[in-house]
Image (tube, rainbow, N blue to C red; front, side):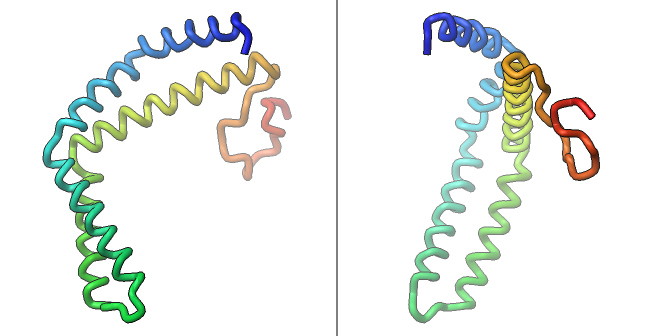
Amino acid sequence: MNGEITKACAALAKLISADERMKKLDDVKKIYEENKEIKNLMAEYNVQQIALAEEYKKDTRDEEFIAIINKRISELYTMISEHPVMVSYMEAQEAVNALMNEVNSEIQFFITGERPCSHDCSSCASNCSGRQ
């Protein structure tokens, strides 16, 4: 990569880093990483996944044990995914992902002169360049 592109990337990165969505993700990520309840739930979830994998490796599987593990994994998944800290973290991550998609779309537009498709094309006659 040439020096001009590197400088432009650095300037863009600085602007993106200053965006409120990035700041919010950083704040929420710290809360997420420090939350003991989430850590414990994730640790148990991982242990249950390992136990399930080990049971599936056996020639003779204990189907009742598998059902118990699957039930617990499902419970843990729900507890993790519905935990307020996890919900905030995922929402912040989705906002940053949307920002990055917008940035990438703009870069693509300035390179090609065409807007990338941002919808499900199955219901339209567009050629995804923004022109009919």
